[in-house]
Image (cartoon, rainbow, N blue to C red; front, side, top):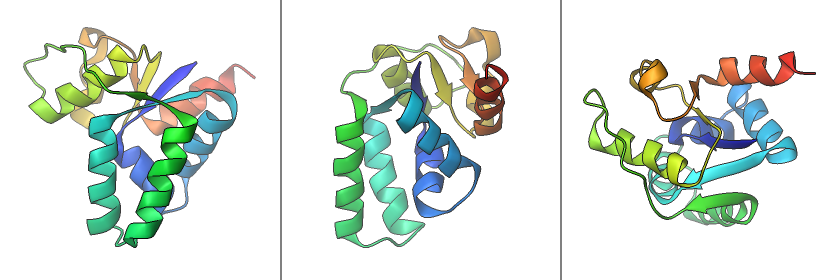
Amino acid sequence: MRVALDTNVLASAIGTRGLCTDVMRLVLLEHELVIGERVLEELRRNLSKKFRLPADLIDETEVLLRAQAIVSTTAAVVKATTLDAADARVLGEAVAAEADVFVTGDLELQELGERAPLPILSPRQFWELVHRGR
């Protein structure tokens, strides 16, 4: 399954320990990770400002992610009046990379429900979905 992880899921996976770390590890080991260029830009900023990681560690993290992921350089047009331009772009990158699911903690994105161009799940929902099938 192609799984797109949003910026905050990735930042939490890298900067802390917990469910997001487990989700990222699972995706890297058993699925295809999808990341958009916008997400990588936001991730660099978040890791620097929120988690205060050194620049060389952020650079290494980006190199690792680019080596392990399908990186979307384009974005499909996502029309949802409730989304801001940044969220629409991030979701559009996942759609353009043909992700099967988008994992996010962003409630505005989750609330799109059936109006979304692909299933949008919280990290917990994704974790439960994958483990139900085992």
